[in-house]
Image (cartoon, rainbow, N blue to C red; front, side, top):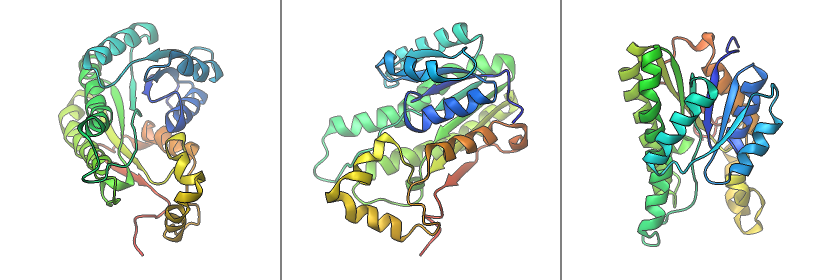
Length: 253
């Protein structure tokens, strides 16, 4: 992919799509910083499994801008600069109207939206100083296709898509590429309940019925391969894009 020699900091890198991205980029010769939300040991486990032996582990609560700024400063020193920022930290859970308290709303928005913004806000000056950088945010298929009972999650991911577009306009003149990947249904620990609980099988069956490829859940590795392309020279002209990878789930009936 022509990305060897770069450094990448991956929030949400201790599991799921984030961990798959860490593995994929490490195989391309990228030095990886794996960020867990709280459990440093989880990040250390992923870092220890990566090829190359140069990966480092970090932990930070992305809801706290002060903690995120400290993370970016530490990673900048430890990694020798941050070329790539992958904003993979996120949560997914139902928020039904009339049954969702303020704490549940705040947690969703603070992790998914504020956490993404805090990391970009902290890393942008460093990338601008070098006139070089790649930022990949994470939206979702439900940024443009509603999912009943998950209104706050849908809103948080739609916000990320528009944030990406605005930042691309702002940062492209500084040599910084900002894009968004919006996965569809992807097999990760975050949706294990939907994939395994008998009481949720009707939801799983409904997903399967409208997935034209027959692959109800993509793999985390599928998403990691797309990210690797987004960072490559082949994607040089892509700025402010929202790349949808959903097995055709949202294409129509």
